[in-house]
Length: 295
Image 1 (tube, one colour):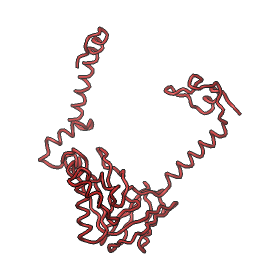
Image 2: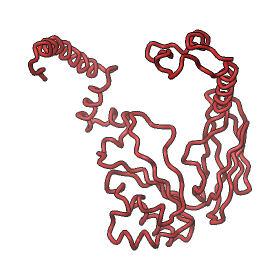
Image 3: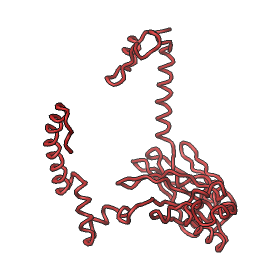
Image 4: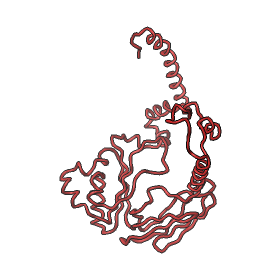
């Protein structure tokens, strides 16, 4: 079965103002895609999306090769279908909880001693997620600006240090830089074993710190490098902490000026709009006359 372009537009509703599906976009006047195949594809896509929404999932800080903190309660969290029972099995433990109305869940594993034996963590609900090569030891977060971010390949004797960086029980997680005005629920990055081909672009400071801990304590160590080049101290402060600190009045006013919901923000945004409205007629006149457009 074949249909022409007009029939397909009418049946599937593909015509939009921005992207009309018409003959001028096609090499031929007819499309040779059976309508049945299109409908099957659409139904399959919808089913996959529904399944993905219901699946048990965890943020990427949980992954293969990760290290779990020893000697303390260990929170494990993620998302699932509201009301779904989620079970975590790891190192002989089995803990369960139920996802809340918004699909979020969290449970805690009991404290565990350091263990360099690779183990599997299995999280199950309507589906099952398995993380392999998981160790128990020390987990440390290294964060800051360029001083922390600076890569190992740029450090002194980098080639020699990188070549001997073979510590399979030292695990590294580099968090990809991403700006946001609000706390993010997930990160971009994966845990890896410390090997020469993996450590080169990792934070030099974080690597040396983790290596020293690993060699001194003789337990697995996980290092999370979440630094941001050229960032200032104030960019690491939450808006709530800035608002509640009297000594940060100047910074508070600047933040308020960026927020159109505050009195200061409304004043600044209104002034900007008025300035733009006054500039537009002048700019249009200059453009029409072929003269330089004023700034």
